[in-house]
Amino acid sequence: MNDTPPAAEPGFGDAQRASSYVKAGLILATLTLFVSEHLVHYALGLMAVLGVLDAVRHPAALRTWRTRQLLLLFALLWLPMMIASVNAVAPAHTWRTVLPYLHLLPASYFVMRACADVDVQRLVTVGAAVLVAFVVLDAFVQLLWHRDLFGYPYDRNVLKGVFYPKQRLGLVLAVFAPLYLDGVLRGCRRYPWLWLLLLPMVVIILVSLKRSAWLMLAFGLCVYVLLYARQRASAWTGRRLAQWAMALVLAAALASLNPSLRARLHETSGLFSSDVQAIDAASGYRLTLWRTGARIFADHWLTGIGPRGYRHVYGDYAAKDDFWIKRIGGGQTHPHQFMLEVAIETGIVGLLAFLLFYARVVALLARPTVGRVAPVWLLGAAVAWLPLNAHLAFYGAYWASLAWLLLAVGLAEAREPEG
Image (tube, rainbow, N blue to C red; front, top):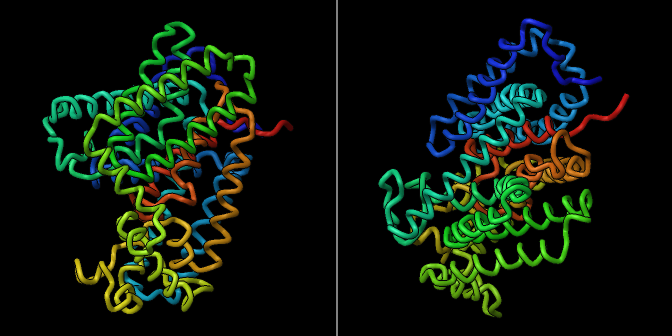
């Protein structure tokens, strides 16, 4: 069954066009509000209400292929959270995480249904690319003059751009890098010099000093190239490959001039040491978090301790000379590793479900798309949920909201099966 909204009847073209602009505007406004700490959740709440209303008004749409994919993917993440909540070590905190997480389902449903309209999808994709370009430009200004367009400072030599005072710039840009690259590629057909726009994006992600962002950038760009080459192998001429290689090399060379980046790279070199303490220090003492997390998992391996419970039992499992206990009196709020966080807080049940979830997302990447060569939104979701990620909390409201929004648009861009 095709869940793309039917063409408007004669005389209703203006109304349909206005509806498309309103829906696209709401989605883009929500994307914009990710620069804030809490405002984005009000926009998501509104979209959740609209999603419920849409489901009530159009019940037949609940049986479509896209909706079934969304429900399956959501169940794979949320049901283990629910199971883990029964014996949670911090019930109040866990339930405050698990129950509000539910609103991401109708919000995602609204976005998916809205973007099934090709006009809305195009507006959202172009608008998102423009927003990302602005964020890159703003951060580049901050890098050069130590003040961005809003007056935010280049604080402690860490670029934060519009996300000031949070260090989320590199992480968010890495997620949207495939979409940005796709936009540049399209623009290059008419203006070949646009490939130069890749330089500031790569530079900014590198000097954001987030190693997780570097990993996500590499993963996203590699998968994008593979998907693009599969569809348009003839487009990857020697000249084209030389252009992209030159852009990456030039961006790395420019970024290497930054003293903070050089210091970060020197620190990272400790990861290849044979000394455990040196590796721990080079990882930002994440190794300490992981060892403590492994002890927690060993005691709660089946269904876990409940989402967001890590911080509440950290002190009970930490070593006597634990770095974090000495420094702040307790552990971090999460173990800074997606697969370990899922295993600790939802057990082997949640870990297996997450692996099934991610396998399904990867499988969807292989599907043909509506309107473009590579499924850039689905790829963004795959980057956001990359199992090797070691940054924000997997069950945290901020990152979960961003990932589900990406997935919702991604499901809309996936072409549904025939028949």
